[in-house]
Length: 142
DNA sequence: TAGGCCATCTGGTCCT
DNA sequence: AGGACCAGATGGCCTA
Image (cartoon, rainbow, N blue to C red):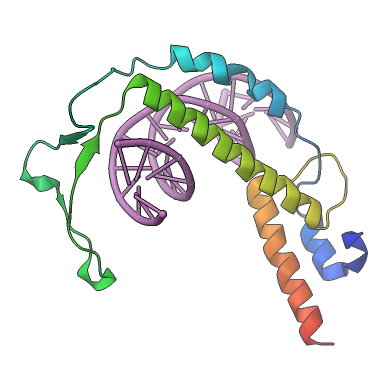
């Protein structure tokens, strides 16, 4: 539907970019995910009274630029155990998954030709920028 | 085979 | 305290 509104200017841009193909490796990539959790690099289980560990010397005072209105913060390393790390990995995977869902949705919104390849994430963003600019111009000139 | 793209892990920082 | 967000590193897959 959205492709009908596109003029030659936008089409020229689109032609230069990679075209669609639905993710074939999405499922295959998931293969190594969950099972790898147990075999992740030997993260030491570091259980201590405090989840924070001081950096060695007094250089660990992290000073933010005062022009940005930040206060100085002490730079302390947060110590997490294996369970917490794995939980964080799962959350990160979910977060990236939802990010990719958003990219897929954006891919469906921008006009493309269903050639052989799907748009990469960076191409999707660039094309969306071009498309939005084009539509904005169209709106302003009517 | 090199380069592009992507998923995943990880540690640092921000935010609630 | 802990979850969200981010960026760097790494490794796999695919294509020219």
